[in-house]
Image 1 (spheres, rainbow, N blue to C red):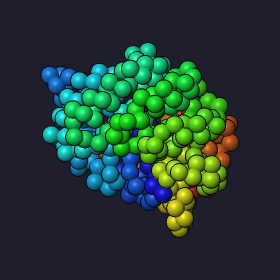
Image 2: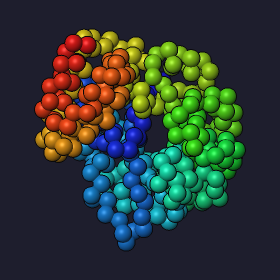
Image 3: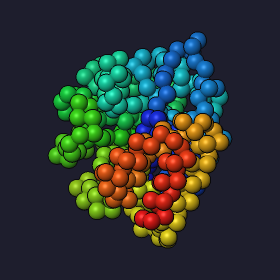
Length: 309
């Protein structure tokens, strides 16, 4: 059983990841939030702080790339390897965000299996690096994902992350586990399951449903409950309230050292949408909390909520 941290753009950057790893165990690997591929002449990977090796010493990280031009992938992978030494890369063809999809990136490329195959062919034949794909069932229909799996069957992919929703669903509705069954039967590649894994009970149900899957990716589940990886592995979480409180205080302090109060407040508000679920915070309390625009007041109130949880 291997536990992966999902790439959540704008959230799971290196600061968040390292704070999570310092305070909670159970993670085996992560895929970083996506970075745009470019031709060699336009690349400046020195600015990609999220994949600087010094920022990724605790848990192995795989840089995720976004784009649709095969030669740009080759140029970018070579540049990142030459500068930082990475030997494995992941391609995001699952992001459902509208502005990404409109540019035929993320899930927007899934209706075009020719381009998907062209990128994978270039990445696996023109470079020596391990290459993987993170996908959904499709943008509009599962037939799109099945066509891609068929095209990629004979390429030496490291693994395929599958989120069993369509792009048009975003994160609404429930994962289509029947289609996930079909997808598992349509590939011999190693599968990493991603999607609505929020509890030990979810894992037990899914692991029985998909007995060939040994890799499980946590996204929103670990934002709601940072102890989730430990719980899935049967680890002792100890005094969870005090551990969470210490994590929250130190992470906030690190954010304030790196960015202004306004940016830290915006990030905390985003995370409290998830924390509120785990803490069973009433919706009215959360709404009142999110209306606060003064950092000190927000932080004091959230500390009080955590101390009384």
